[in-house]
Amino acid sequence: MKRLLLVLVLCLPALRAAGPVTHVILSERYFLYETSFRAERSEFLRGTLFPDIRSMAAIPRTATHEQGVSLATIKTQTPFIAGKKFHSYVDEERERFIAQVGILRYVTLRFHIPRPYGDTFLKLVEDEILYSGLNTVSITPALLQLSNEEQASSIPFATVIKYHFFLSAYLSVPPHKTLENVTALKRGFYTVPYDMTVVWKDRLAAGAQDPRIRQYVMNLLHHFDTAFQASSGKNNLVLSK
Image (cartoon, rainbow, N blue to C red):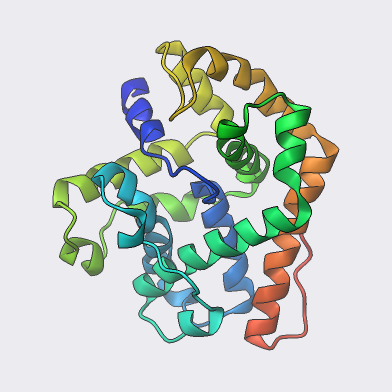
């Protein structure tokens, strides 16, 4: 199992893309406002998680991610395609928010993270903070099935199956456990060298407890809640937890 988790780690998205936990959490928050896809949650969830298969499939990011996606556009799609577009929307909107609040600079300086790895560390901290709110009961059944769009894609069937399995493994434990498993194999985490990954085990816990980072994550959720509310036209705003 640890070796399988290692393969997953090597295939996680780089740059400022949100992590799998964050993508799932934001999907669930979207459903609190938008009723269009509630009955097809599993399809939407598979679509939301699908774009980052690009790392495992060794294809360009542009092959699975779009630019300029709006929430209004998402509503007009089939559940899987809507989820896929939602993924791109989240990545772009999150990157804008990060630049706006300047959290990446704080993270790299506060935890002595070399700049090339700051994005990955922030992604992990977000997933670590949000993991307690993850509903694994709904995720597991969704990843045990394939959507027609996945099977019809140009990505090999075996790769899609493998990606589902590795996602299930990553989402089954909080990120700090994944780091423990990876360092036990004496391997690095994605592009992060092994010696730095060992240090990250402790820094990840500290990052997840850091008041400023926790506030940033709560503000990030509120930012998306506000966008979801505006798109749905509802007056009730879900309080960030």
